[in-house]
Length: 451
Figure 1 (cartoon, rainbow, N blue to C red):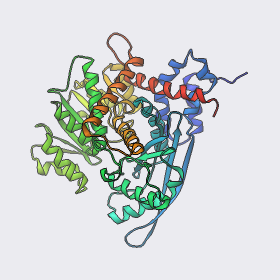
Figure 2 (tube, rainbow, N blue to C red):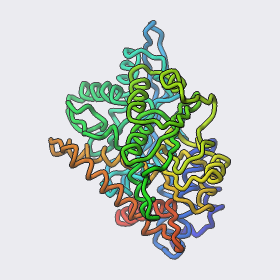
Figure 3 (cartoon, rainbow, N blue to C red):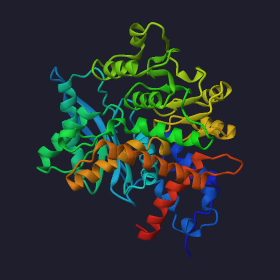
Figure 4 (cartoon, helix red, strand yellow):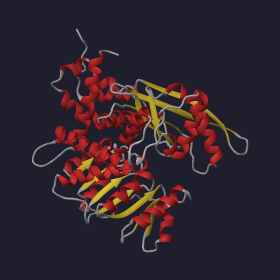
């Protein structure tokens, strides 16, 4: 007789915690999905008998490796690197590489787990993976970053490939780092192939990849507002972060008639009551990307703004909010404050930026709330399109890609509506995204048998 996983949610989660000790981020990600999936699976015996959720919550493999490199003073430095390949039921593993001191196996397992459902929602043939290192690029010279990237790829190249696993960038890994890693991959393998995305336009990259995550989050936000017969015109927006995702989300909100009030970094946030217009956004892009500056210096250039040290921006009254910095930056009390101040909609630009308490607060208040696996899928969607362009040895025009991005975000929104409509005009986007992503992966796994 087949063994079934007809257990309740607490029992299932107790097993996850036992198998993954000291990995709170991963456990949190699994619980957020399982809370919705258990109800959906209730009358679907095949998912139970084949242990589908249990299998998705166990990565196909976790590769851990040592990365040795020399700093500019000739000192030997040692970091740890990982690649988590969570699930390839619908396509090659796909997900970014993150360089940041906060990177742990738990963080990467949560990101790879989330990526599995996010990639499924795009409609493109991509599985879920994630990788990175506890290397901190801040304060390092370009030569030091190059040497680290080359050493990192010298190990990673064994585990990736255009039809196996296609990494991209993430926090701490931009076009420069992708270039160093791709150069080393090509050097070792003597093979020019689409093994990484986020590449430069001159060597296989795609137009609008830089803008895609931020733009996509705003397109999704606009789709949510449209269900209430509203748009972004005249609406105030609070955004966290000041990197690639945050600045491009701000840019698209301005283009659609909204007013951006805040940006932030790890030091605190700036509040500009006059609005952060395109000129100011361009200043932030240059300041953060080329000067490697801090957001607090914004107030020197634009004196009407204020800088609040050591705080996140969720206390600033707004119509819409976009957390675009990092995981667990928006807590339960922050969510309560946003709602009390009249926030109507939240679209996540980062991965799991809202903790479980905050998620429950948003759902209980029945506001428009989009989880990252839905609203920030624009970046990986265009990465998937870059893979297609690499395979075809061609490049698509910007207008084509912009339209494809809009269509993909609209498609994700429709999938969320299909499984998240709770009646009475309330759409549970978390539930809709979780079920839609899970069903696609689960049905592919059923087709393959027990593997």
